[in-house]
Length: 370
Ligand code: AMP
Figure 1 (cartoon, protein in one colour):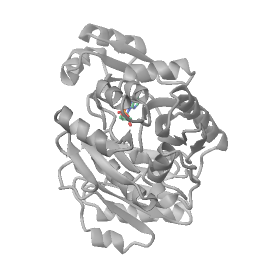
Figure 2 (tube, helix red, strand yellow):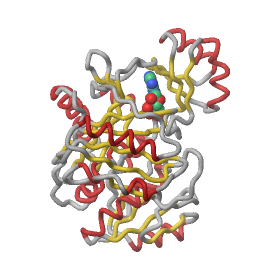
Figure 3 (cartoon, rainbow, N blue to C red):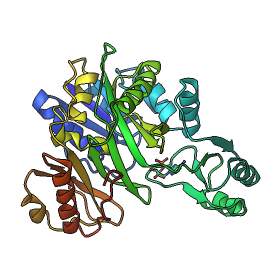
Figure 4 (cartoon, rainbow, N blue to C red):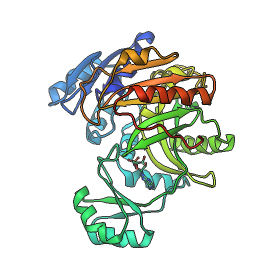
């Protein structure tokens, strides 16, 4: 089976690493001009000729990057099976569509307004009550295309800074922690759920993901399972879907955003779960049985961003698994991650601190349950 992947970054690289044991081959189609997968057959898409070439090689198509022209994915769908479908891409690349879907399915979200003008932004900030977060409806990721407005008078400046024709404005959530749920749906509609992860972001970029959480009520996991199952079924989705949520003081969950692909907050599963998110995505899209999603042990993923430090020092740590992406160092760039496993959460936190001390750019690790 030759699997075509739209996008050619580290997520694609890790998909391929999970797929070789299943005798999969990989052909990547990069649309950015900067592929970094460094594995498989990488093609850079500039014209129809490249697309035809790509389609001639692959048996089915998936993606590791959702900011793609929907028309391109629809055109590919005419020729080869695409999992998840172009409809999932269409919804997930647009925050307004995403919120409308959450509303329709009864999945709670922060209060929000859609605005198309600086004056409307100011009015929304007044109505919702500051602080609010303004986000471009499309193209934003890792906190880019966003601004926190602390006073309605800041609206005009935020509008200029984001520089986008349509924004979503959300009430600022006083969350206890950020969490995510990852689930996989097979071609036959079977769904499996990973234990939820606690995610620590700094400046909008994920730094740590820890799963399972030591203090998560089973009932909260079940609520998250219900939300993501509703999304998967509604989109007739095949593959891995990620839903990021805020957990509030009363234990409730508010949906923030979703990603129609394997996700950084699921990297812990490469070493910490019986079956990784990457393998399960490949199983799902090929119509194979889905694998066990249970955690083997408390696990924490530490992102290596900007500078790598000394990889050899990390490798001296017990039950530490380094995954490097073979990318050049650059400020803010995701270069690698480390998965740390320990029999107890206490031992795990000690390991996370020791690991962070080895990474030149790592912020102080802080979790809600400490
Ligand atoms: P996003 O790109 O929507 O995931 O936003 C990036 C980060 O900004 C999130 O991980 C949160 O840390 C923060 N953030 C986004 N929306 C809100 C909100 N409505 N309330 C509080 N923090 C938010």
